Image (cartoon, rainbow, N blue to C red; front, side, top):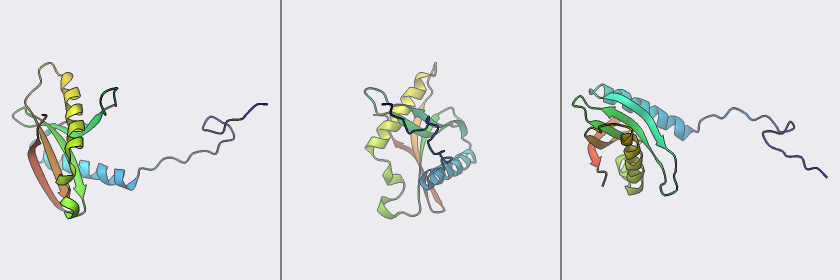
Length: 142
C-alpha cells in the first residue's frame, strides 16, 4: 500500500494563497520607516536596516531595527518601539533585559565584520501616537 502525501509538493494539495503580512508586522515596518526618516532628518546616515542574526547553539539570535552613523562616526544601534499611547508603561518600557541582550548579540555580530569598530551606542526610539522620543544611550552592552 502506498500512502500519498498531502503537502505543498503534492499535486492534489490546494494552492496556497500569497502570504499577507500580519497587521502588527505592517505597523512595525511603518514605524521603522518613520523612525529612519526622523533620524536622517537629524543628521544620522543609515548603515543597515533589520540586521538579523540566526539562532545558534548557545545563543537565541537577535535583530537590530536600524544601524546608523552619527556625523562624528559613532555607530548607533536603534531599537524602534511604537505604541498607540503610553498605557502599560509606554513604548520605551517594552525594551526589557532579554530584548536588550538580543540587540547586543546582533550588534556584536555586526561589529565582528568591521576591521576597526568605531565608538558605538544603543538607542531606543519610542513612538507613541504622534510623539517621538529618542533615548540616546538607552542601555549598555554589559
